[in-house]
Length: 90
Image 1 (spheres, rainbow, N blue to C red):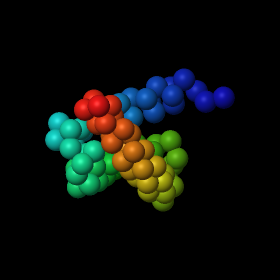
Image 2 (image 1 turned 120 degrees about the horizontal axis):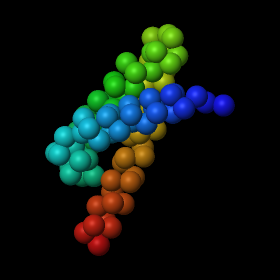
Image 3 (image 1 turned 45 degrees about the horizontal axis):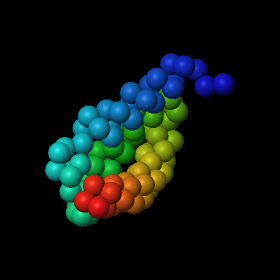
C-alpha cells in the first residue's frame, strides 16, 4: 500500500507542475502551437525530474521517470488540448 504522504506529495507536485507553472500562453496556445506545448511539458517534466529523486533515490531513475513522464504528458496534452478546444469552440 502506498503511504498517504507519498500520494499527497505526488498530487502537490502534479498540481504545481501542471497548473501552477503553466503560463497563460501555454494554456491557451498548446492546442495549436507545438512550441508552447513542448515548453509546458518540458517544465512539467523538469519539476518531476527534481521531485522524483527523493522518492527514487537515484538521479538516473529520476531521469528515466522524467523522460517517460515527458512522453506520456506530451501525448496526453496533445490530444486533450485539441479535444478541449473543439468542445469550447464547438
